[in-house]
Length: 61
Image 1 (cartoon, one colour):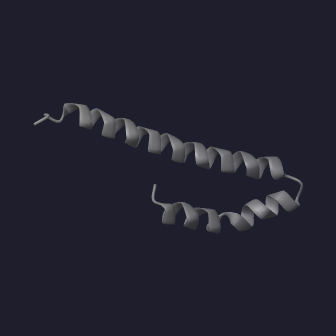
Image 2: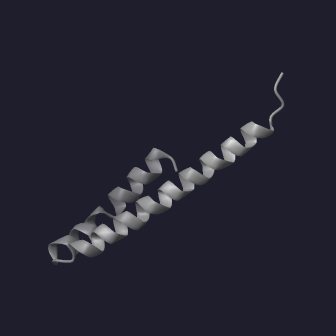
């Protein structure tokens, strides 16, 4: 994901996560952030594996 999209999503969800934190539900907001970053990291790993797979198929001069 692009850095701008990640930043925009975090800004949009900052108020609801802060609301949960103030209501003594900080574990829920932490869990949601952890899931969000897990999804981002899985997408990036998939892109990296795909790029490595494509590099191996290119003919060498």
